[in-house]
Each structure stands twice: as C-alpha cells, then as structure tokens.
Image (cartoon, rainbow, N blue to C red; front, side, top):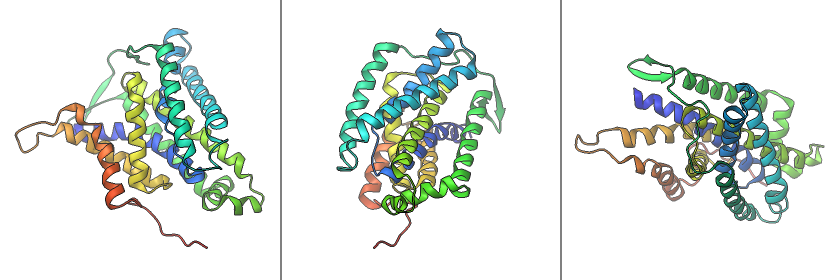
Length: 292
C-alpha cells in the first residue's frame, strides 16, 4: 500500500509535466528538452521567495509560476518560434542548448545544495497502513483538480474547440479565423506553467537539486510516447503507470532474494521509451484518423 501511495504521489508530479508536454507536441509537433529545467526554475524561485525573501507562501508560489511562465515565453520566442516551421526537429536541438544554459544558470544562482521549500518534518497520518503527509494530500488533490479544469476547458468551451481545431490542422483552423500562432505561443507558455507547478510540487514534497532536471524530462517523454504522441490523456495515464512501476521496481523484494538498487529507478522511463518505440511506436491510446 505504501508503494501504491508513493506511485500516486510521484505520478501526480509526472502527470503535470506530461500533460503540458503532450499539449505542446500535439499542437506544434515539437519536443521541449528544457522542460525539466523550467520545472526546477519554478521550484527554486518559489524557494527563494519563501525562504530568502520571506514572502507569504501563496505569494511565493505565484511568483514561481510567473517566472516559469516568463522563461517559457522567452524560450518560445528565441529557441522555438524561429525554427519549428522550418523543420520539426530543429527545436529539439535548440531546446537542448537551452537546457544546458538553464543548467548553468541554476547552478550559478542556487548552487548544488538541496533546497526544500517546506523544510522539516511533515505532518503525516496513516491510510490503510501507509503513511502520507497533509502536504502530499494537498498536492495530489491539486493535480487532480488541475486535470479536471484542463479537461473542462478542452472539451466544453469555445477556447478548447479552437485548440482541438489547431491540433487537427492549423492551416484549416486559420482559414476559419482562428489565430493559430497565438494559440501556439499560449500553449507553450501553459506547458511551462504546468512544469513550474511540477517543480514547486517537487520542492514541497522533497528537495530541489539541479540533477533532477534530466530524469523529470525523460519521465515526461516516456509518458507521451507510451500514451500516444499528442494524446494528453494517454500521457497523463501513462505518467501514473510509470511512476507506480518505478516504486515497485525498487520497493519489492524480488523472488524473495534481492532488491533492485534505488539508482536503477530512473531506468524504468528509459525502458518504456525503448520498448514502445520498438514494439508499439503509436502508443497505447493512439486513435486512427483519416487524412486527405
């Protein structure tokens, strides 16, 4: 039960990241390899506002989200927008460069020491034999609430219909008066906001360190590949599946003889990518569509 609960907690972080990434891939058809760094920027800035400037907690979170959104906007204008219309793989190279730049800036401003937004012992209670903190309950609930809001916006509002039209065919959508370039920019910034929230989630539940950026990014990519490229709900479901498998791999006493070392936990996402690209590259939840 504790492993299942840990999988739910880790999956909520991965779902935020994968949901934003799937939106960007579905609309632009590009991968943002600096997603993990954007998450850490949101978390580190929240830590700085709260622990260094001693601003109120909610104000600190808002500040971290705003800075994550601003960095995402700059990333889109400088590293994505000039390139993605020429070739879909060019932003892959430019965002790798951006990730390296952001890694250096994170190390420069925040150093390598672990940072916790809420340091100290958490208030925990028992659920079916497993321990969970009130902060973790709040984070899981907030993630589910955000996913419900996203589902409502995408499927029950005029704005959501415009987004789905751009996903299906942006040129046809533009012929109907939909401003596709504006939606491209907005959705890329939205993915940065979700990533920033994921970084804040990480900083509250655990500690922030610069080495977390790459594993976060890889887990999000594994989720969208397994779920079906551009399928946001498939990516979210697979994010929870991957997080649960990570917990089971290192937490179960296999064959009653040995435990898998914790350092191998991150290989689960890599194995997902390899296996799905080899045997089911369309993903678990791909939908066949007609094309002309």
